[in-house]
Amino acid sequence: MKLDSRHSLSLKLLRVVLLAALAVGVVLSCAQIVFDAYKAKQAVSSDAQRILAMVRDPSTQAVYSLDREMAMQVLEGLFQHEAVRQASIGHPGEPMLAEKSRPLLDLPTRWLTDPILGQERTFSIRLIGRPPYSEYYGDLKITLDTAPYGENFVTTSEIIFISGILRALAMGLVLFLVYHWMLTKPLSKIIEHLVSINPDRPSQHQLPLLKGHERNELGLWVTTANQLLASIESNSHLRREAEDNLLRISQYDFLTGLPNRQLLQQQLDQILDGAGRQQRRVAVLCLGLDDFKGINEQYTYQLGDQLLIALADRLRGHSARLGSLARLGGD
Image (tube, rainbow, N blue to C red; front, top):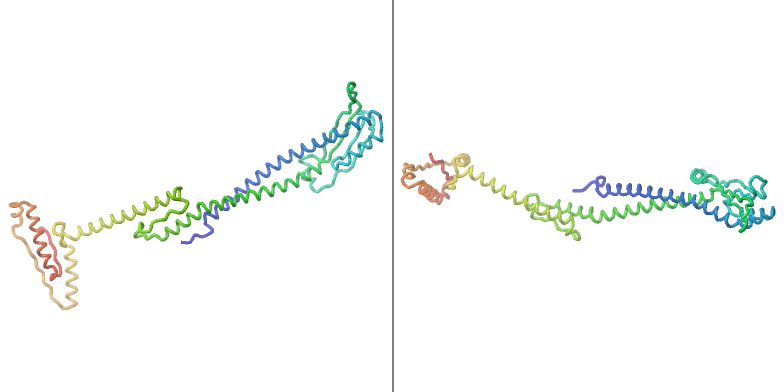
């Protein structure tokens, strides 16, 4: 019996496992991407605070001394960072001591990252003198373009998404191979042995225990199946014996074991047919016991039965020369 591969349990399992692994991989990858988006936002803020802290002292000195050239040098240094789009040093409500800006970066990932990270983000720090006076001189403001962070985020997300799916599919394939080795392959071997079983003698060929599966569910299944096959053969044997006994009861006299009237009629039909074809004669001898009822009443029925059995045995001794021997009945 050959199973159609389209209906194979292994193929169905492979589809289910791969789809499940793909779904899990997509979900986990998306969760990781969401977390990375949060980290990208934090990275923008962290870089901004680091940049502001790094140039706070020279910016304070420039605004304190109203040194426009020094302030511009500070801004030129800030613009060495690719994410800085705009920067200014000055006091609120007054003209800026120094200010510089440049256009947003034109990157192909902006359409995707701008809704997540924002197009740009502005940060500022108060420029305060040294203690004990701690006099407020102005603010240093910077605006960061999120495109460089977004580009890194997209690249990382692509790697995470693809690797997550590949990892999940690889894990699903490994699970399928393990399942095939642990269950599907042993089941196929059991089916091969089942096909070789003779329905008339089911217990003649027992299912062998598979190596490595003697104590697990497959071993228990094989043991139970062998017990079931033995029970089927035993019950079949008992049924055949019962049928043979029933047939014998219907065709033979229970007391003497001789054919009864029904079987005698069948045998006579065969004898007469054979004699007709061979042009031979047939003789029928009927033997009756007179006053047998009196024997039963005088010597009990047990003795009468013994007499009938003895007579049947004596007649059976000459049955080799007889075409048929039967007991017609007690009438």
